[in-house]
Image (cartoon, rainbow, N blue to C red; front, top):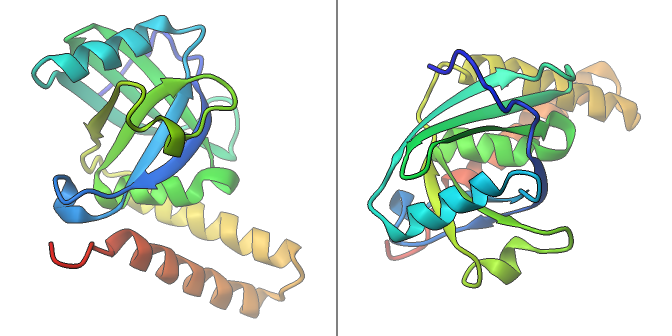
Length: 186
């Protein structure tokens, strides 16, 4: 468990997406995140070193954001191949699908880039790594955060309480079906 994050200032997500390969996670979709690491070259160094060496050691922990109740953070700490620690802060409203995907697939595909880059354009051009994010007990907390956020969103769009709850339930069901999908023939 992570108890202290020295470099907590969150690293900004500049792009996200989804990848799927028969080589990973039983061919389920895996969230892909591109970080803006201009102020944190150690993250790029970690990814480059990790992609050319045997798997390293990384500890992950989910947390509520220190900066906003509307955000959650994934804290990462690595001792090798390059020691580094950082936090990825997710907006619950904007990144709920990616957060859900990380929790369900128990991993994420990580790379760094610059503003304007897209995950789909850089998959083969820039070093990237697959990071395992095991269950840490956050799923129950996440369930409450997700339902509250979606319910509020649907109510703000004009649905009444009962219809917002139904829409939230259906949306979560649909999202989980997507993350559980497997490529045919695998």
